Amino acid sequence: MRWRRAIRCPSAEALVIAACAAIALSLRLYQLARPGYLLGVTEYDDGVLFGNALRLVTGVIPYRDFAMVQPPGSMLLMAPAALLAKVGGTAWGLAACRVLTASADTANVVLIGLLVRHRGPLTVGVASGLYAVDPDAIAAAHTLLLEPWLTMFCLAGALMIFDGDR
Image (cartoon, rainbow, N blue to C red; front, side, top):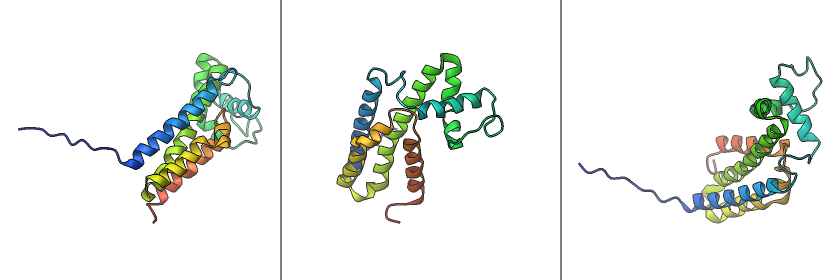
């Protein structure tokens, strides 16, 4: 009996999404590769958000043991990186947070493409491509900020709710 494998060619939309995601990831990782961006101090907010996650994994309970004005979801998102920081140090834990945030922002490019893929490859290219090279999106992905994560969860929710134009 002869086994046949069906080789499916990826659609034009999938190729455009992959190209835009590759561009987005390369821009975000290039930014992190610049001197001082991966292990240095670039923002105030990232230290506060990551510090809260560090306190959480050491057993300190937010709102009971310390006051916190940031959204509590940021602590939970960065808890794995904070656990890594217990092994490799806080600088490497914050570096992991920065790489995770850049990855989440790259996922936004893919989610945008998936949301508009029913409109054709041109629309996918415009939507995903504009987000991939948007200077504000790239700037927000350089460290642990909430904007890329918020965008990712909103886009994922929209993708779950909408089915094409319905």
